[in-house]
Length: 366
Image (cartoon, rainbow, N blue to C red; front, side, top):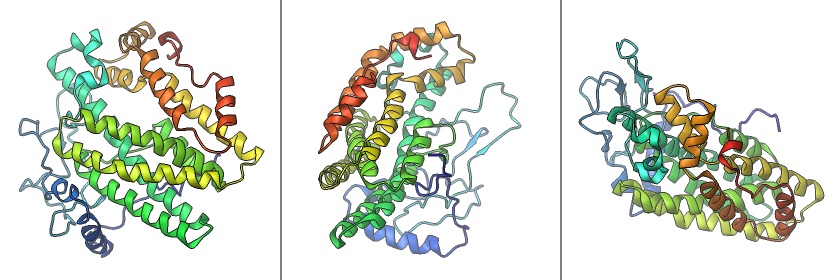
């Protein structure tokens, strides 16, 4: 799987800002989002409604800001739906004398205890500003990953439209693509910076998988396992989110995610699983589960980015304080529970034989 990812669309450029496509898209999305009771309240205006007045203005200029100094052309509909890519790129002020690293300012949609940071001594002993930056990074990671997954979902559903074997199946996937587009647009206003997938191994793997054309592999890996995980993940995010509008937005995704997952199971059960498809599924899921086995490494990386270089002993200490085996063990079992359907038992057995469902102790994670 070394092909350049194109179907997931994570690296697709935005159309020129003067393009009429923006106005067409705004019109279409207005009609689509009007069917959701949540979306109109989440897409309020050009002004990013979740910005804190206390944020410093010399280091970060939000693309959602309605500051009179901003001259960026914005493309929105009459309800203020912000279209991805229609804003100027985030600008970091490089003239600042501060020695601090440039930390994107993401709102704390989830508090320190959600990430287990309240149990980490290095975080508790940090200054208030360092704690704010670490929490900003952990929140940003969650939001960017969710955004990129929905972006890849548009490509995946489009791929399945072409692989459909009946008119009804094609209709279903066309509607599912609209779901993913709606989710993608609804998440955008909550992000302070345009996401990138270049340094995220999970998103890189996802892009490579979506490039494939083996329908059985796509159904099992993407729709059964990852859509199932997305359902569980969004439910947890919505439950613990401290921002009401974002919590409602994530909650509104659950019915769609459940339908996508259930349809994947139904179609997979109608698909003949070849030995090649079986082996490919096991190999892909082994890579994915390995990322889960190593625990909340993203939290460690966020701390390191703010505090500076961490020794291996410090990383192990952080992971121990985060109870990494319990953290990853719970997630591995949830993922295992989604692996169902004809042929799934043999897949699970092969993954168990590799030890893919065993969480790793802290010293094996770094």
